[in-house]
Image (cartoon, rainbow over all chains, first blue to last red; front, side):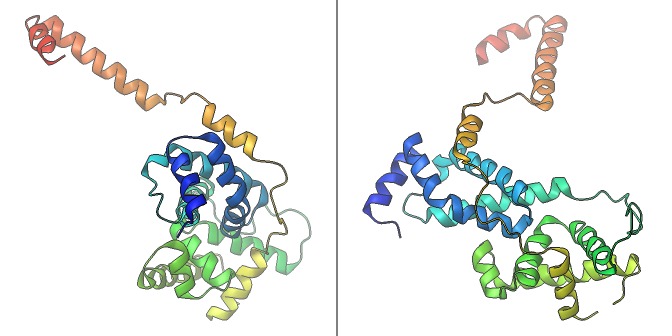
Length: 177
Length: 73
């Protein structure tokens, strides 16, 4: 729950005060950046998405309820912006064998890593986000559900669908470790 | 493939990014984005042209529709 000072800041933000928005940006920039980075795993993309997310927040400020948590609202916007980025980056159905386009000698682990990364990026963004937090970041179902503002059941079902699709894609690429 | 193996393969494919904070101050970029004029997309333009053309054709065929249009404006 925001305290009195924050409440005033949030009220000014909703009214379009850019100084108030800058204060909020400075306060939440690091938290939002880390959140986006955990999802997209790339620093440069995370910076672009952060700018997009704060722009969306400013544009949609009228819909913000100043009695609620700005951090949670901002995280939801950042997640949506990150999903849009993942959607744009998603490889088209056209790409095929994983070994194609890999030049020069590389370690088996590196080639395997590239294949897995490609297969993973073919999942829908919603599945990618849940799978990233649960499998790569090692968060519990409950933690992922809370972070994404989703029911635990939805997290479990998305994770299960993601794992199934990933296994299928890896099998298609001939990866059966 | 068990889930543990899949998890370790994913961790290999997506190592933890080392970046601790943005490489530059991003506030000026946010301000530029806010102040940039909203561009019309090709969809907006197509819809506007379509509506204008529809009104023009209707008025050409049924001039009396102008009264109806004037009534609604």
